[in-house]
Image 1 (cartoon, helix red, strand yellow):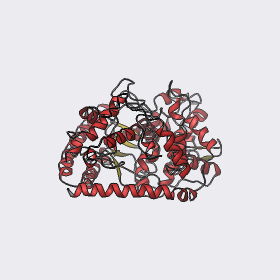
Image 2 (cartoon, one colour; image 1 turned 45 degrees about the vertical axis):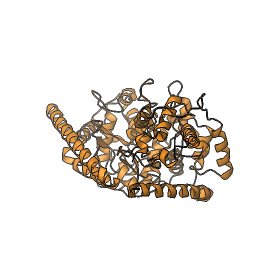
Image 3 (spheres, each protein chain N blue to C red; image 1 turned 90 degrees about the vertical axis):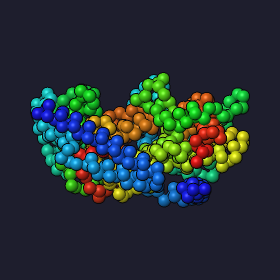
Image 4 (spheres, rainbow over the protein chains, first blue to last red; image 1 turned 60 degrees about the horizontal axis):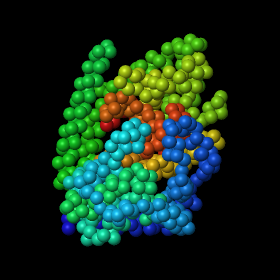
Length: 216
Length: 284
């Protein structure tokens, strides 16, 4: 094991510990915050800032209950809300009809590399991707990766390519908040941002033994 | 004159591109062998290399803004020199350091764009429809607003941010800005905080300033807008940067000079309290 990968693994463990501690400390941190804006004042300013969104875009301005709870608590929901979000988001998962969660890893790599789609500057039928590299290290060959999320190097290999773990990864990509409520990761399947095939392809990029993710 | 300016711009862009490619090549070689903080250092070196005020095309915007400020326009045929940006009619030195702020005559907190538009309408009798249509410059589009903001912001150069949150409406606007900073929405569930609430994070290779707390990151960020964006070949203001953030967040475009942008700008400028203003700057 290279020092870099060892450091990544330690980093992941520390990150997990911090997430746990943050969840526990959430209510304390919240109580210390200064004067809050009244929700109706914020709502009115938001309404005035996006007066007339294009057809079909108003739902992007409005929050769903999960977004609202995570915003109000700065991603540290109470224990009860944490559980409420987890159960609600878990209920949104849709598996492929044939139960196969692994697609083509090469197409998955393209999805991970593509950062366009869904912006008001994008064409509706233009390329759309998960932009995974914006936040995660994946293939060790790709040096341009972000650090907002944990490194995913050897993701499948570490898990011995177990079918249950591949299924869990599919769930996480479909709706990360069903696993970690108020996670920063987009709910790619829930929002139908990625297609079912794209979700499968990205899962394969993580789990195929031939994928560069698993070839250090 | 115009021709010379364009040639200068062209040469400058070409040089910028070559410099960028060189640094990227160096950066990837270095990064291949060493830790990512070396890459960050190389990016810093590139930033230092392009940060030359004597070669900054944004000073063309400053000059155009100066002319616009003094030009009689509108149904009342007067200049903007009677406009009160917070320190008294016609005063521009240091006003940018204290904006957004509360204005008694409108009983509102306004940012620089809102105030300028208000002055154009009330003082000059300018129909701002066309001005707003040209809010962001582009190929063949000159923006009065960008030029005016560049000129006025430049008059706070070398000063430090000192926005007030003493008036109840300023306190309210700050709190709204803070709430909007943490407000998650749209099809990627992002808020400003998703990218800007932790130290030392990157998106791809781009370092992300932590803007959730007062200090160096917020000071360096806010103190370097307006800026000449090499990647866009245009001078841009914080108004445009926030519009661009919401684009990346998959939100609809926020209305120009709307209260949400003012609230966020007040929140961010407050985090930059005491920070040096060095504008217009140059960025990637």
